Image (cartoon, rainbow, N blue to C red):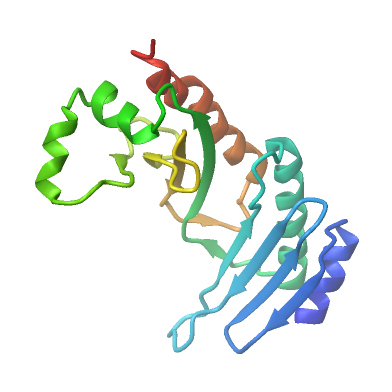
Length: 208
């Protein structure tokens, strides 16, 4: 089936550089022009056939629409390789990570002093310098949602460059659904819209 999956990826226009598999996982990678990683996993020793597919794009400037089109092609190849008319999708999730320039020389200073209104002196309780930190918000599904979802937002100082604020926004749709109802373009678009309308509004609130 792994060879069939490679063939279906090629037919869908998904290029890749490396392919590896073991008893429980298929891993496909591409380095250029835009990095892409595909993981197809089957956990061992399950009473029922369960699996997981992950599509990752570790690139800071990748356009959402272009990535969504590739995810759609990957899932089409997955469905053709492992057709399952009785398949049930147990849950779906999307996570988008973004960087924003801080208004201070250190992003944690912005989060701690400006956002939380806490004095720098209070951090001395830890007995050593604080390299970074941040906020985490978890919001449960709401009554009346057409498709319930849990939202988690992390806002942290980026340790790789402390002049930037790292933001991760994750949506989880926990309700099982039948067939191949992954809908990558709609889901990525929903998360991206939430970032631009809600998360960025929170980040900009109170900035001078």
